[in-house]
Length: 143
Length: 120
Figure 1 (cartoon, rainbow over the protein chains, first blue to last red):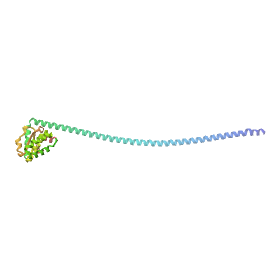
Figure 2: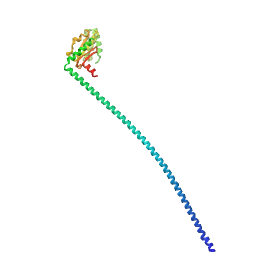
Figure 3: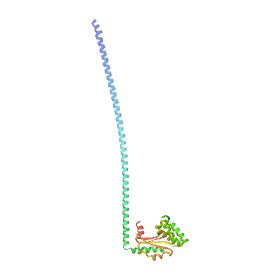
Figure 4: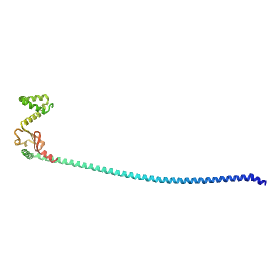
């Protein structure tokens, strides 16, 4: 009986106390672990949400950028086309003007040649032409 | 020129009315003095024109391309005896005749003019 009392007081109670403390510590550990897992899960969910949101934003940004790029490319193409047409028009005008100048030059040259040919022909035997023109002039004076 | 042709013409026509015998000598002296003697022919022609005009005549310039073409007598018949007719040769006309009356072109029947009109 004494032994039982002694054992109860000095062995069983401290042992039970130790067991109880250990159980509490384990329980606390388990609870902390569960809480940690929950936090991790929440963090994972939040991370997934952020990534999803970022993905959506990135897609929108890329889409907008593509639209802008297409618009810009279209504008550049239109401007380039306009410029090309303008240049072509100017080239055609220059060509036309040069052709006209060339034609005028040829015409002037031809006139000069014909004029010279007539003068030379008249100068070979000028009397007849001279007489005719002077007669005409004298008749003109009488009038 | 120190003085204009018109100034000399005016002075001479005044002088010839006041002192007819001394006017010509006076003009020559004046031209020598002013240094305008080198323009003597031009001034004399202008005086001549003025005198012709004062007598009621016209100064006629007849230009032809060559001497042989001039039929002076035939042409003179078309003008008054008071008129002065100055015949000139101008090969640039090629053929025909150009008439100027008192410095204004009256008639141009030259081949040069006809060609100009033709190739205008």
